Amino acid sequence: MGHPHPLNYAFQHRSRFLAELQDFIRFPTISAQPEHAGDLKECAKWLADHLRSIGLKNVRVVPTSGHAIVYADWLQEPALPTVLIYGHYDVQPPDPMNEWQSPPFEPVVRGEQLYGRGASDDKGQMFTHIKALEAYLKTRGMLPVNVRCIFEGEEEIGSPNLTEFLKRNSDALSADVAVVSDTRMLAPDQPALTYAMRGALSLELEIHGAAQDLHSGNFGGAIHNPLQVLCEIIASLHDSAGRIMVPGFYDRVRRWSNEERALMARWGPSDDQILRDAKAKAGWGERGYTLYERTTIRPALTINGITGGYQGSGGKAVIPARAVIKLNFRLVPDQDPFEIDQLFREHIAQLIPNTVTSEVRTTLTAQPALIDRTHPALRAAAIAYRAGFGKAPAFLRSGGTIPVINTLQETFGIPTVLMGFALPDDRMHAPNEKFHLPNFTRGIATSIHFLNEIARTLEGTKTLTFERVGAA
Image (cartoon, rainbow, N blue to C red; front, top):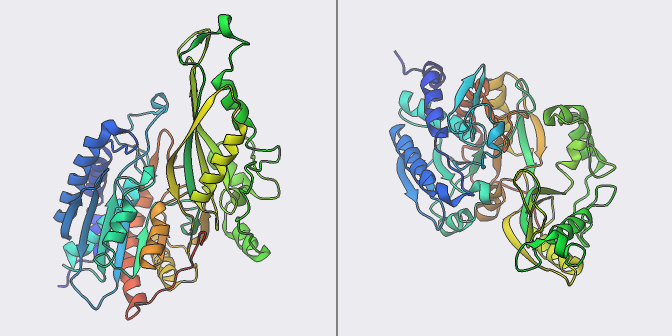
């Protein structure tokens, strides 16, 4: 009798795979909150132990100035191509807590959904690849390709230490192709390969007024309110047509052909579908573009949070001493987050009245990424999707940002296969985040097929092309 097939192994152990994923989710790995540093450390150790237990080699927890990078590999056959598998074990804050139907770090299954923070972004998706590797190693004792795994704990805060790690170890980490599962499908029956992602720039703008909160009866009308100043500035950052009113902001925005926009219309979600996924009554944004185009080929500026003054129940008659707003730009080819950062600072300096002072803090920068959708690695992924899901994938642009995509391009010159298994209604970054369990099962199968297919596709191929994106 021959060895059992990796697909059969994955099917037979699906209940254990789910239990292990739940264990993974229980770690509250909120990278943005310093009080969870210990949780990230414990999770990194758990993940390293798990990778070691499935048969991967050279497993290491690599310390950084922030949260650790977990590395593992299987490099037994020099003649085989090498696949770099990337994922992240950190998660977004779960707030607002009162909107969760069950505790965010006590994962539960309801119907076909697994609920918990990180279930789809990105613990569940990256776990599909880990379980595919296990299925191969436990049945065949080997993989059809060489593999390097890099799992970081800082993606949700912009991967501040990953670029240095990759560049410092570029020779030791060489690969032929990367695969990342941190994106979305169109629907449960329609997988999707992502070939473009927006860049990002996150900022905090703080306005300072008086040295302390003031009595609004004694000083109202005489002392400028920092919260009012902040609101007036933010209200001026968009015009009535939804365009961003920062001088020079659109100078590098790439224009796309009618042919490209027609392909997007054919593959991508409709306005109605996007509104349904968002549970919104109507769209908003830049005129002349569909909602899908507004979230992918056009840049955006969103307000993520605002604080100032009294936040408790009832009223309090004060003029706050300070007010803070958190902003996020999503950027498109060929915008550079560092250039946009400077343009924003210059613009804000012109808007601040002499009655207050201001401070701008940069908290995240990430370049946009664009992948050649005709590349052989994406064709291999399309074949794997058809085998795993029974249907060829759509090709999509994403409005989201994964900082490592551009870093892999710049450092290694390799393409990244963005093989998403999340659904549009999985509520990434929101309360009641979930992962559709049939996608977990099919994702493992797709990853198994991908490893096999990429071995055939890239056999003897060591020079791969990748379109450069970003400002020169």
